[in-house]
Amino acid sequence: MRYSKTLIPTLKEMPSDAEAISHVLLLRGGYVRQLASGLYIYLPLFWRVLNRINNIIRQELNRIGAQELSMPVLHPAEVWQKTGRWYEIKEEMFRLKDRTGRDMCLAMTHEEVMTWLASREIRSYRDMPQVWYQIQTKVRDEARPKSGVLRTREFIMNDSYSFDVDDDGLQRNYDLHIEAYDRIFKRCGLDFYRVESDPGMMGGATAHEYMAPSLAGEDEVAICGSCGYAANVELAVSVSKVHQYEETSRQEVSTPQKRTVEEVSRFMGIGAENFIKSLLLISDTAPVLALIRGDQVLHEKKVNRIIGNFRPAHKDEVKAILGVEAGFIGPMGHKLRIIADNAISAGVYVSGANKVDHHVKGIRPGVDFQPEWHDIHLAKAGDGCPHCDGSLRTEPVIEIGNIFKLGTKYSTALDAVYLNKDGVEVPIVMGSYGIGPARIAAAAIEQHHDVHGMMWPESIAPFDVEIIPLNVNDAQTMSVSERLYTELTNRSIEVLLDDRDERAGVKFKDADLLGIPRQIILGPKSLKEGLVEIKRRKTGQTEKHTIEQVLDSF
RNA sequence: CGGGGCAUAGCGCAGCUUGGAUAGCGCACCUGCCUUGGGAGCAGGGGGUCGGAGGUUCAAAUCCUCUUGCCCCGACCA
Image 1 (spheres, rainbow, N blue to C red):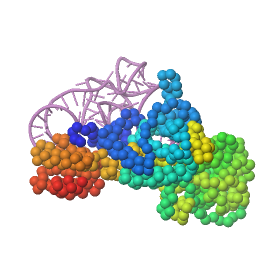
Image 2 (cartoon, rainbow, N blue to C red):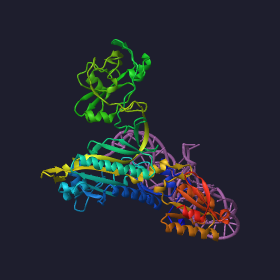
Image 3 (cartoon, rainbow, N blue to C red):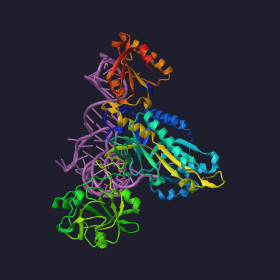
Image 4 (cartoon, rainbow, N blue to C red):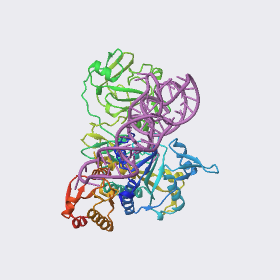
């Protein structure tokens, strides 16, 4: 392609609204433009990148026997009503009516419609397994679009759905998708982790997320350096550091005006890990007392799974329910439900005395009070790995893909059933798998760039090579450029020819910004010797070669 | 949804506190000359009515009210 005839509106100045590096570079490099909050126009360069990514995805999914198809973006409400998500999902779903007043919505995802199709077309165990996928637009009214193309309200997703007769079949398809996804992300040149994740509203028990490490990431994963345990911190299990404690007898201590763990800890000269933090939570059904170690943070999602929806109690509620001011609550002597983090199952602790201005030391959990034991603390860097002796570290990541075992949640709701060998009607067992191509692109930029611009992995770069004739008014320069352009193109190499009548500096700057992996530089000096230069964008190294050598190197 | 910030030429910004005459700068753009290995130089030129509505005032980019959009933090996130 000729640069002079391609829309590549590069920007010299820093866009003021961009924060994430990928966002800045996509804007500056003329890859995308923003139409409105969370809505982006993909210009020719970005579209080429996405198509390359999508082709890798296609190849790998076809390889495991998946079949590509395409689904509507506009859905009738009924299918979403049948699974209940029409009611469960709130403002995040775009809803509208057609001219007859029928309720419709824009697709946030395609479990419903895929399952609807399966319910009509799959009749027998002989029809399975099936894996259907598409590369389609999804629309979600995000509460807060951000970071350029990383979190948008409309985006392309590759989503794949498996249909099996039983859990074993599902497991096979799940494993096949892991294989395909591993290959896809590897081929796209990304560093990534596959981590255990929260199935969330998808339902089902098992789920993994593919995460690309990046400062621009919204998620955080906990990783064990020794055994490879990796999980989203939303559900990461961790072994709290063992702490030293003193065997003291139970004893009340006066702690005037000292309420927080930090205050009392400093006042008594005892480390925060020797405290029990008592938090009163109001769930939908009853108040619950949650206990965690003083040096830890309560993990609301974990608690949510145990007691359902809840909120922290207000100050006056604490007084009304426990009969003591917040700040002096202790675990003992209460009748309500108590859940405690495993970390405090051993040891001797200090906590509130349930009496203003007093705490108690020498408290023995399991002896002085009997809670339900759970993991309800937030895993943090330095905590022990739950599977080995290693310790965990945490890292910010971009979610680039996810895989879920759905089970029969959707097939049951939409009556997608088949007849098994015994002639019995059984619900289809499903899995769903998703990849965000734009996030792969953004993650690749986040992971591969320098101060001058992007450095695309070869597999997903918009072009394989950029030819840079330094002086387009020089006949020899141009004839060699044209020859290289033609011959490389004939060999199916994707070439960008910077045929603009611009100064050398402009072309170099733009080329580095665009990040095409290889640059072929044609200047008068080298050409006199019959040589051209090849520059590798990643290393910045240049080598001089004859034209034949260059052609042969591809 | 809570908190904060911004909105003046295509882009990046100044001017606003303390109202006052043709609203300014850099980049980009157009014309000419010159130049061609890291975003050149000189000369000339076009383009905005200050996000929108209302108000105060002799006078509003500037003060007041409302409103819309965008960004950031948090909540949320199939």
